[in-house]
Amino acid sequence: MTDQNLFEFPRPIAAESVGELGRSQVIEATPEECERLAQRLGLDALLSLSAELNLSPKKNGRQIHLEGHFSAVVRQTCVVTLSSLDSTIEGTLDLLYDSTLKDLGEGQESFDIDGDTDAEAPPEPLRDGHIDVGEAVAEQLALEIDPFPRTPGVSFDAHRSALGTGRSSENDENETSPFAGLAQLKEKLKK
Image (cartoon, rainbow, N blue to C red; front, side, top):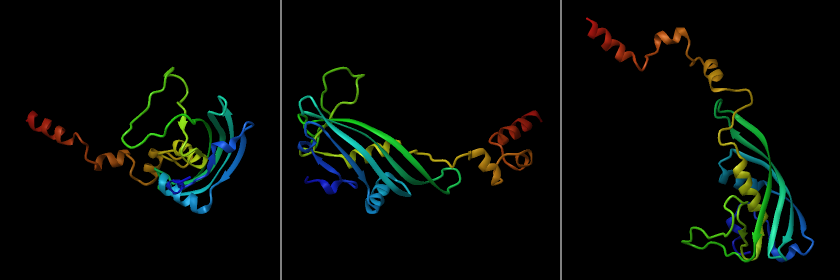
């Protein structure tokens, strides 16, 4: 596969190698691949990533169905406490690849798919006769990552109170209200 270096977690499988009975594949990211994926996905760290996948032929081998599940351990920064937070992400894949579709080239925005618009996602094209199952897992992982991770049991209000920045009756007297200027103007108009 010529563009193997384009992806951080390349695991290309030749469509021809799927065969009539299909094939199973277990993949696991190396520490270097985890580091590159963490950078791409905006994570503090990707501690592990593995997947168990099944590929099976459909429509007389014209299409290949990729399904399976993956597990990852990610390290992110809690949006409330700004402390490190490790979490496990479990996800599934269910993709269809079609050998008759051409990969979108430069300048092409989309291609037409006949059929029901409420149906499942359209099939993906093969790249040079290969399916990069590592990239498929990486893309699905990106969709599963919590964009605003929080340490379990932590809320903004509780954290703000713990830091002494929460509102209380004591703080209300010392803080300037956004309407304080209007209140002063109202008092001047009364006089």
